[in-house]
Image 1 (cartoon, rainbow over the protein chains, first blue to last red):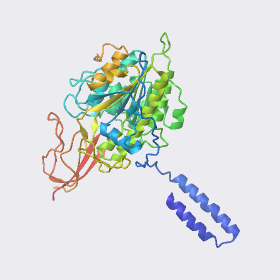
Image 2 (cartoon, each protein chain N blue to C red):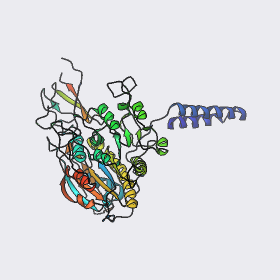
Image 3 (cartoon, rainbow over the protein chains, first blue to last red):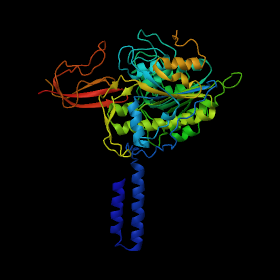
Length: 426
Length: 68
């Protein structure tokens, strides 16, 4: 497009030597050509990973007050995939400076979480997600079941059984490992076509993310399925509103919504909705659902994942990891904003594991503003280091201290009076 | 023997034993996964030409150019 504009300017200068009528006609033809060319060649949205201007840090650096003495109606569980302590620190330094704080760092309760899986000191998102969703350890790659393939009810399923509305919001495919562990049970994370079926069968109220290809029959171009199931048609038949754009998302008001904004993972750039917008819309929809309970409010359980922090770290790209962490932090801010107004909402922010074995070294400059910290990666895979957990709202104090990742859903279950938990599916 | 580059896909969870430019030998373990898992091994001797992360499948695609 830039090239077209430069060439147009050159041509317009050369037209100057003709008569006024010819000049006018030539300019109109040229401008129409440019318009047609621009329309015919839509350039894909570009991501400038070094542009962090979208993130507006708050001047407030003190911790937010903890809500006490109230029951938990709603739970918003935010998971930064691959977001270790250093990823958080790096995003903070880059966006707010050494003395600033990300939104998630302002939550009043902090703790540490062990992340090992049943078969490795280094977990993957499937085993870690299963621990965070079901409260049991499993082998890497397994979803919602123990190593002997016994399915375990997830905290989302248990919340649904209790009458709560439920939602999953991610920037990966909606059938990727982490969201899968909250509403499906399969032997391998690679079975995304089966996972997509189970997400719908589980009647999760709000499903926002990418991965449309796993909902298309194999006869459709770019389908990721091995069968002829048309899950988009099945979703509509089951009462879901299906949407693909930000505009359509904004006008949603139903109790069952499926928003798939890409064939694969999200691009995380406009015109797509941001993770924060998706989170805000999910909260709006879920908090409106009124089940047939005596008091008309049964609350909701929402899991939000910043899926692509992990992807930046696997490529050892610090700028991508920073940008994705800040996009995730904006989603946390949307959750916190609702929780502060509501007073009955527990917000938990954690990670499934750390990716990249990231450390920050250097710091030789005496000028704090010139934070010469250099990211140093020790692996392209995951690491076995503990991750942080941050919490606010009623019951947040439960998450202080050092804990295993399997303890987190058990604590949520206790706060929601869900018993027994963990519990096998059959 | 073919000299076409070979692309091997391995789980991205674990630390890799190889980096771009490394010479690998036939049968060499390519990552540090748990012992009970089937370890991906180099199917030929050669040089690691590239390592790409595939986010969708959460795997590394390791391209090995076979030794002449």
